[in-house]
Length: 125
Image 1 (cartoon, helix red, strand yellow):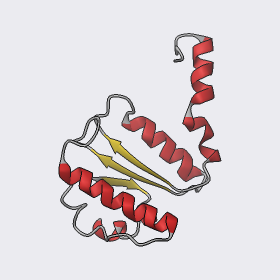
Image 2 (tube, one colour):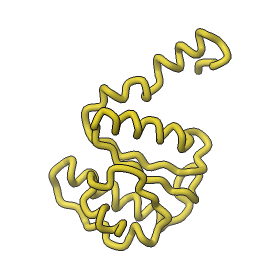
Image 3 (cartoon, helix red, strand yellow):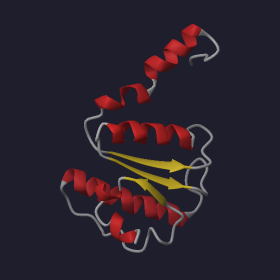
Image 4 (cartoon, one colour):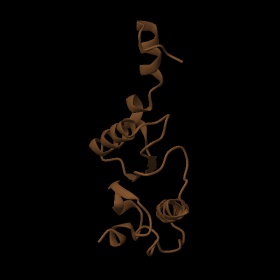
C-alpha cells in the first residue's frame, strides 16, 4: 500500500488509481455504491463517474444510502440485482426480467446513467 505521507507512496497510489485510467475504459460500467461502505466512499465513486461522464463513457451509478459493506436489506439487494440484470441485458443484447416495482421498494438512488439499464428511467418517474 502506498503511504500518502511520502512522495514514493503518493506516486504509487497515483500509478494504481483507477481514476487516472478512466479514459481507457471501453465498455459500459455499472457502479453500485453503499453510502456507509468502510473501504470505498461515495466521493470516490462520484469521481470515477464524473471522469467517465466527461469522456462520454456510459456509466450507471446507483447509491444505497442505508447500506454499509454489503446489502443488509433484502429489498436493496433485489433492486440492485434487477438493475444489474437489465444493464447486462443491454450490454449483452439478451433478455432480462423487467425492473418493475423492485426499485421503488428499495432505497436506491440512481445518480447517473439510468438510460443504460432498460426500464430504469421508467421506474424513477
